[in-house]
Amino acid sequence: MIKFENVSKCYNDENKAVDSLNLTINDGEFFVLIGPSGCGKTTTLKMINRLIDLSEGTIYLDDKKISEYNIHELRWNIGYVLQQIALFPHMTIEENVAIVPELKKWDKKKVKDRITNLLENVGLEPEKYLNRKPSELSGGEQQRVGVVRALAADPNIILMDEPFSALDPISRKRLQQDMVKLKKKINKTIVFVTHDMQEALALGDRICIMQEGKIVQCDTPDEIIKNPKNDFVRNFFKSGNVYKTSLFESDYRVKDFVEEGLYDNMEYNEDINCINTEESLENLFSLLTKEKIIKIEQNGKVIGTLNMGHLVKFVANKLEKDGEV
Image (cartoon, rainbow, N blue to C red; front, side, top):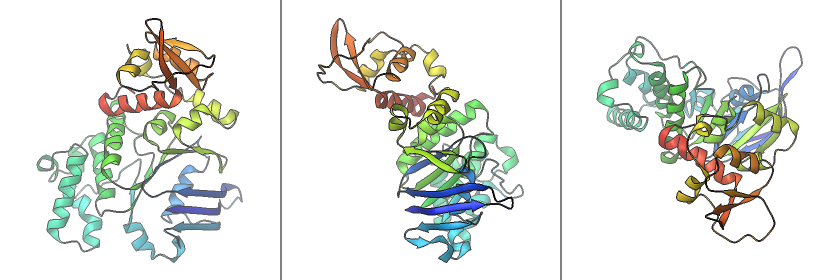
């Protein structure tokens, strides 16, 4: 568990990049920090592994102050993935990934087995990539190696600072799909910084929206969409064109939710809006921004209800299965 208690960061001009942050990140959680440029999200991330020293307050890692850890051991036990992955150009992929496990004095067979397994988990064939140099890889492949390197020494925590933002759209979607699959296989606490609301919704167990160094809202994707705390959160979603993606230009209809079982099959007698199974996802989203629950009608009969949680799940499923988002 990572816990922030009244944490602030002031730079030389005395402006607070982070202002009195109180926050708990649970073990095994995929936790997303998001907000406009300069809101303090990257500073918050970097204070966890002491790349940036806090000015006030305390950060705890498993109930121990991070200041009490040996800084090298702290960083060895926290994986870190940057936007620019910075692999060592003169080393092979195997040598790049093996650095921290070797520093921790793992035996060679354990290191080899670990690297092989992780490369397979991110869709890179070990026999094809182990002996390559970084210059022989595409940007997306290098970023996959960066994820593998961060996981190599089996840390409990992974920090990811806008890791996919420099990639082309196709590579970015593929990496997002990899992360959706990977987080199901590994029991890691992941703290992920992004400015992309679609990415946050697809990946996060919880999303922390920041503004001017403070937390505006911290909640599940479903709750944030259904109940934005204020106009800033609501407008941030609108400006990010959440759901205004190729998914909405596709042939998907409400009937696809029914076929996938993404609805509540129960009677609902209150007078609320109703949507036909032939309606588009865009019309569904429009209704769900006004109503928490809507009825589904099929062949003139109400068969159940839908809510925003079902829509979020549908989008995440499409991202995982076929990269539609």
